[in-house]
Image (tube, rainbow, N blue to C red):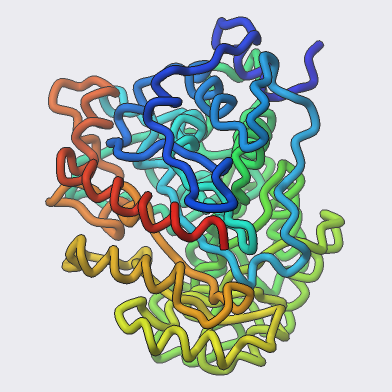
Length: 443
């Protein structure tokens, strides 16, 4: 029995585990400029070029991009997360990938998002010498209503409502392969492949009580109650289980408001954990997983910085955009002595409805990657799928978080992938993003 989850995934798809170098990947590879030339990824692409590949082809592409320039004909055992120290999350670039939007959409069903995430990995820039890139998956838990289904673009199917104490999302896991490779092993395979690419990984979660359902043994669902010790235990254990599958980070939606802080800006639904409960949750996930190197990121956690650091966070989003290079550089200077927590630079967040031009977006990425006096003082940054692979003109980040439309013109999976993203202009934009990362990865 092969204990290597990557090899097990290949076998589950009906292929043999012997890998071959991929010529297309070598032709499309971009390299870091300077001393980190061995860091490489594919760019000048549109996502459908990767998403139509088989799982084995995707893994061969990942193996071809080996930073050590060693090609492994069999995927190696025991891939560890890239080591950037325990406080790596304070400096990282966080890129949220909508794992549901790029899943397989066949008629009205959605599945296999984790396989699509594996296929897109070759196009995610690896980490730099001094700081990590971290890929955040938008969905991993089942969403409350409509999990496993896609609907019309105007029908709500929010990713912000989750179920705990049950299986993983049908949108994400390939349950068609479940007799050959478990859901947990599929997730482990993704994390191993991302770590091989030199990329940290994480997932989004929520803390608003009415956006969380607890699935009981009899199959009924009830709202999470933060005053119920059993519910608190379930919440901690469910997130710890995912960390034990190889994730390095948890992005916490509405973390700013834990303990009832600045509730006049709160847009979630339901009660939030007390401040001490939020501290306890974060501490227990670290303790139970045995991972002191985890990164916890809080949405909109800026302002009272000591409050968020003492909560256990490493980074806070939505503090400053990258529009003003000098303002970001001065903020970096202000936090240079804090090596545990810092607020971050935002290119785009999950509530983005549209309106940022390609030029403005590229300027923000440039600021996020270079807005400092010394690379060792870099602030964390936050990007969305749209910042690496632009979406089609009539969609936006928040839309695909709140709904799950198929953009297929003929009902096929391939047509959805082709039409979800911008085409020629998206390819040129992806090339320009790659140029920025190419200059940054040697820092």
